[in-house]
Amino acid sequence: MKKVLFSFFLTVCLLSGCKQQKEVIDLPRGTATAEMETAVDSFVEATKTRPVAPDSIQLHSIMIVKNGEVLLERWFNGESAEKPHLMHSVSKTFTATAIGLAISEGKLNLTDKVVSFFPDQLPAEPSENLNAMTIRDLLTMTCGHDVEPNVRRDSVNKVDWTEGFLAWPVVHKPGEYYLYNSVGTYMLSAILQKVTGEKLLDYLDTRLFQPLHIARPEWEESPQGINCGGWGLQLKTEDMAKMGQLFLQKGEWNGKQIVPAEWLKEMSSYQVPSAPSGTRFEDLEKAGLTKDNNEWVQGYGYQMWICRHNSFRADGFAGQYIFVFPDQDAVLVLTTSSSLYQPYIDLIWEYLLPVL
Image 1 (cartoon, rainbow, N blue to C red):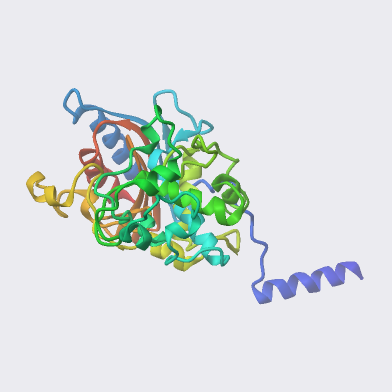
Image 2: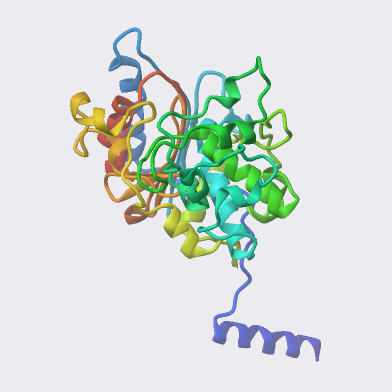
């Protein structure tokens, strides 16, 4: 009788198309084509021979994911699959993801004013521009500063980073002037901690890292005990690849929607015009930087960069990258110690993009 029931259940499952979904812990592995292997060999060689001293590109890792499978992974200069890497500004993408989750939980709104979260830390007479600054302005690097606040470097006066940010002159009307601003991302972390009662790392641990089977990472904190948000996160290369794959899967993982699809779309879509860190808009033409030759003027989303070839990326100092290519259903991750930026990405377009 048990055999009959089992056979009946099996038949029903087969007819209805039901199946048990295997939980993704490590990304599944596939096999790279000979063409891809050759292209990566050429890319690695070019990173050694193209740069002119004293410039350099020192690769640490490469991972290519296509159709949800890791097709190629390589390690260099003492790095390994199990060794976390300092993300620098790739951290920003994870902070923006946390903000989207908090919005979906009803804890925040894009239009919330920054000053509303810190009534006891405001300057004596907040300016009109400071009062107008919103969560969205922080996400898009358009909070209105003419120079990035240097509060994290002020070790002499030991300024509270939040108070230092709020006291910094807001020269431009928020939402209208782009300036790369890592301390603005720190403020997103500070706001999240205010409204959730959890540090950014703790908040993401249960909502993002655990669902993606990413071992709890380390994240640098300010002297005030707030995760830095804009920098300081450490992840393994495959952890980075999982984040890129999450964007391709529109926030779904192991059959569950862990991040709203619409939020990831907003993060990775053009929101505002952009300029390279340390470069002012008025100097772009003088520097010869155009959309035809520079990856940092393609536009900015929410803590993510828009790229050519209908792609986008999380981007960190010294060449930490998560490239997402929706057209190719592919993710490319690189960790590096590099003093080059655009020439490095040009090599990616030349050698790696054609084989994705």
